[in-house]
Image 1: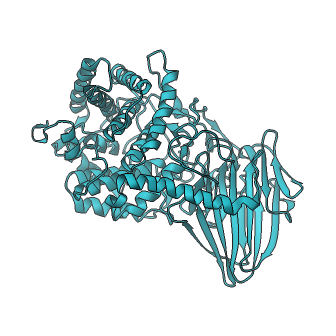
Image 2 (image 1 turned 90 degrees about the horizontal axis):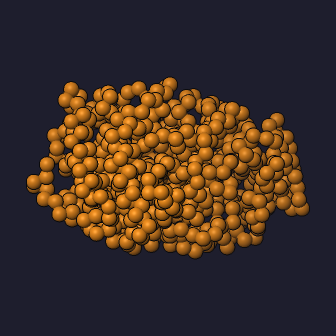
Length: 634
């Protein structure tokens, strides 16, 4: 832990139950957990204020311990070992699951978190601190004893802890704290269970639930492996599997929604204001994640997302398809943005925000991402239900109507709306995929109109979006700032990889945005004070894909190896990585980054000639399946 009381972001692991996610520090402290859902207010929030936020800490022995963490193989069950000279404590953390995890699930698992403490070596003294601060610590949380249980309450919520009968209740200046100290002999085990409201929280069931949870995660992971022969990913098999598991953690299994990340307000700039709430389902992020699930052999999870979209389609029953860019994890409107002034923010990075003002923005790229996700499922051999077909046709119509409008872009600029090149290209993707699906007999609609607008977008982007002066596609028609988002042009088949303008853009990104093996998002004013301190992990993977697609395999692998080397000790990534230091910035774990890793492994495998479950878009194999003649493509 640093001198300011905060662990580095990278020194965390994540556990969850497909409704919420807890972060467990390398020091065995849970400093982030929202209950009963990921989008709910925090129960433990020391990650955003180490004094006021509340935590669930386990400490062992005296002095400074040596700690290590690992996931139990092929699971999201986390094991933290606290080493002392005389012995060690092994702490196993999980949120219970059972049965099959594919796709959507009716009902909810009990909202519990289990911590199983085991003593090994010699006897050791253990200290436990339990200090929930409900509702982001906005009001005083009371802690009292009810028989053998501890109960924390505020005006609206109730959290329990069982397994710590000797605890006493103290005050730390910011509220009540339950503290217990006890001695453990070699071989001793103790289960601590905390849960929301009426969760049973039975320590006697921990071993049984642990076994069921391990079995559930492994069954899910190997169901995917059996379909896609994960060996194609070598030497990145372990990283691809960890990314699959990280993405699954961000799924809300009741609805099919997928959160962009597990946290709010972890800063893109330490001490700065670029602190956003990512605990919601962006259509863009969720579409990308669904495509990664399809490619890695988990189509039921991709279909669960499309079922989520079907529910949104019902809300668009007027035929106009008025979509918002994000929703809460239950399909409702994401809440408006609110600043929590009583919290100091991670390492003093105020403000702490809940909700996200970007929900009100126009982001035209969502049309392309939705159609692309549906198209990928069709390529993988799955039927789209009638309701979804109608919805996707309406999305294509909407792209025809909206593509000439200004928007806020993929990076959610908070300044004046602009004609972003990437947004126009994604409208082209929407219409291209709609035409392809119509030619397959899957979509019905104004196909001639889709074709006309597809052609018009391509002509306009090539005329207004490419700068001869910069020798690159630029961020917007209004200015010639460089933007790494334009790396997707060949990956989405807007232009072939060997087009001179595409190659010039790749070289401009390498020259101006690539530093220390990582790629920044863009150069230029974005109407916010300060700047990202880190490189954006997703666009770094996009550069890997472009190099692999260009036949520059050695450069692509070198870049990939550098990004993989920057993962944390558990194989997880945040949104940003600071070049030079490797420090994680932004929300964590981040879906976009793990999507990028899976896709880059696919492009590299394709470049090596390996058989793949699904040919990446932009590759020769994919163009041939569409009936294109690569030799005559313009």
